[in-house]
Image (tube, rainbow, N blue to C red; front, side):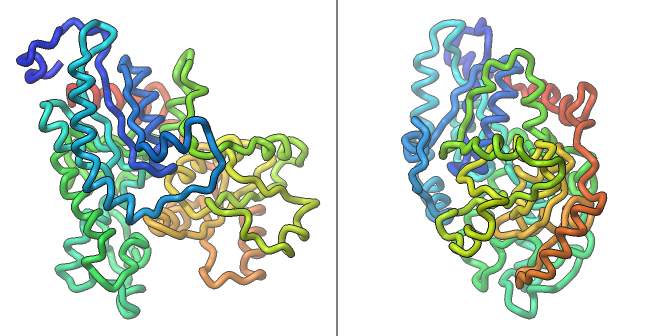
Length: 415
């Protein structure tokens, strides 16, 4: 119960506080935010989980209709259109607060790409925690973009693309092109860059920043990030903490916008241990060449949307091909499975760099893909030792991520 809520006459005897969780409306952001919500629920919170109308209609009931939204248009729309409806929602929740089972909103857990929530938190006098679904190194890199502008390196032209310096404190020998694909433009005023700069700028006003990573993985970067965002908490891998929730009656609650194709799990059961290397890219199987489909039909399976965590933890998996999204990187680390990395968008490039050069869990494939190079990488993956270390200590009872949740709730007064 905040001071402002007490002044408004709210009952201070509510049994559970209410947290409003609002993800950025893309699948890769919705899933980890739901994991954050489940952990908060296990810590004694009621949860109101906010979807956009588009995603709510798309996911309830689940559908496999190929509806997509372009990232730049989503960024523009959320930035311009979401604050007022979000303020109205919180006001309605507060107005309906009348019993111990129906409390007022005590805090907001918001995606880092939805920082209008910071304005909402200020309006209602409640704390707001921003969850960034990317790595600490990506967030620190984006926060330093202004220094690149000052150095005249903001627009990635050919002569700047491969410049190698210590662009991000705690990360050595990082090529500029490896920071993020968002910078792969010639216009420093690109709308997507402007959106990220505004979101990162407002993030400093949040009560706290939480990340799906762990201290041991990004220690050097986190030390430098704390100078930008002092109240930063590592909370990952989130899915491992969710798996530890006792009597988890929310285990069946999912957030997939497409129906999971569970045939792949049955298919994997028929395979020998360490004999399958799946391609776990987001994509449209309809664009695969017919020659490829015919060539692999007796030794492969084309599925639409797979339960990735279950796939990666299956004993038949020897490794996998990935674009190096951060969710799959966390799952990869927890399962101890190496990967062939083919980065594509947003944070993929810097996650690939660290996975291959620092953490020893991946092999980068060149953008100019050649059959022989792919064969050599796969052979090295199968025969090597990369990816064998798992990320278990941080989520154990005395682990950093495990303990950070209680510290966050207490230090930032979320209840």
